[in-house]
Length: 103
Image (tube, rainbow, N blue to C red):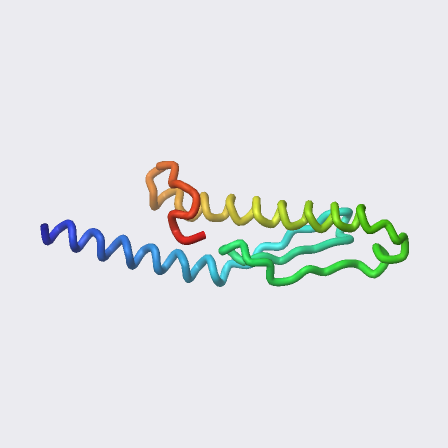
């Protein structure tokens, strides 16, 4: 029983360490050749959206919306990739369910 408590305590510490790393992780993705750039942390919180002023001159709102969506999705994909890399060795190749670490 004591071994189980010790193991759970260690797992909680590892989870807290990973959460801290995710909060400090910064990933950037862009679309439209850099017209839209999104910065996201490892918890998939959008920290910054940068839009090139040239994008506003055309007046094509739908295109701008598509570029923003593409950049956000790409940033989210990069977060997933970074998380999988961090957990790869830790989880021993196990497929962890989404949200296991509070994400």
